[in-house]
Image (cartoon, rainbow, N blue to C red; front, top):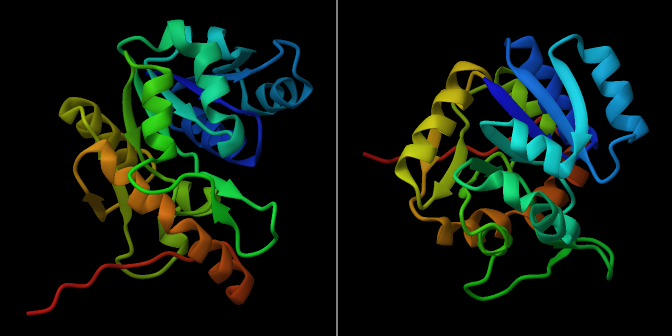
Amino acid sequence: MKIAILGTGMVGKTLGTKLVACGHEVRMGARDAANEAAAAWAASAGSRASTGTFADASAFGEVVFLCVLGEVATKVVEAAREGLAGKILVDLTNPLDFSEGMPPKLFTSGSDSLGKRVQAAAPEARVVKALNTVSCNVMIDPASVPGDHGLFVCGDDADAKARVLSLLREDFGWRVIHDLGPLAMARCTEGYLPLWVSLYGLMGTDRFNVAVQKGG
């Protein structure tokens, strides 16, 4: 499968490397086609890795992963918009605001969410919110955290969600995935992130996750 990664940070590089190792062709998009971080990643990831602009990558990928800071997410999607029409856009972003220190606030409120804003920025894309509640190390290696912990996904397109669920299970190894329903539920998973940041400080590692246990 051809997959696009929008973003050149740790999350994008980690996901891109894993997806290349799984046999996919992966193109990493950046604002500048000559982005040094993207070029260095592609050189290390192998022949199935390539780079380009956000627009280049979105046009290339059958599935597109949005792996940028929340504050620039909609601008990046707008830059890639033409190539996103009809595509599955996996939104990993969170609306974190660190302007007043720790724990961070959210720059969304009420029924708003960054997932909702991402969908509005690319109305013809099929947005699935996923992977935004765990670190990139856990994203690609859920077995590094013991137990039946899980992921949360949501989105308005059932087929898009089904394809993302398949990728998460087959390529990343996730066994427990909770489908929360429509994209409106993105505000709930994004709302967990201030707590995640606090837990990260408390535990001193990013290799942790939550599990949902059902009583009798």
